[in-house]
Image 1 (cartoon, one colour):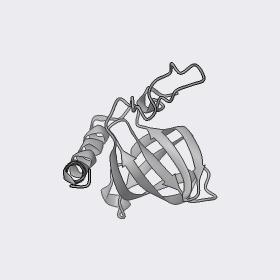
Image 2 (image 1 turned 30 degrees about the vertical axis):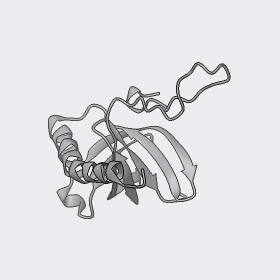
Image 3 (image 1 turned 90 degrees about the vertical axis):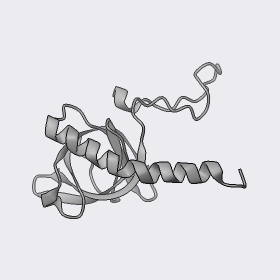
Amino acid sequence: MDETFDQISVPGADGHSGAAGEDRRAHRRYPTRLAGTVEVAPGVTAMVSVLDMSTGGALVRFPVGSSIPKSFLLMLGADDRRSTPVPCHTCWHEEHWTGLLAHVGFAGLSESEAVFVSTVIEALRPDYERRQRYVAERPDR
């Protein structure tokens, strides 16, 4: 498994594999609802949704019936011409009632690709932090 997406540790049969829900990922994930496209076969694209994103990878939802390539270029946004293609590799995927969820890593990004990913993350951060403050300050907590 790619180090970018360490699995969440849950207690095993021996009870020594960690606390339930412990998140050991190397990069903070930011929830999002970004649209994107992926070339799933030569000349065949699929509309996807990026459900969360970090500087190390993303959770990408493919439509039901899609095939998920082992590696692909992710184009973010509704206007692909304005997006920098982000090279991705599929670490693992799972079926979900909303579609196929692919946990992808970003590896070997060029400097411009890394800057693009960081810029997207920076745009997501204020809303994420605002929502975290709201949850922490709710009177019913």
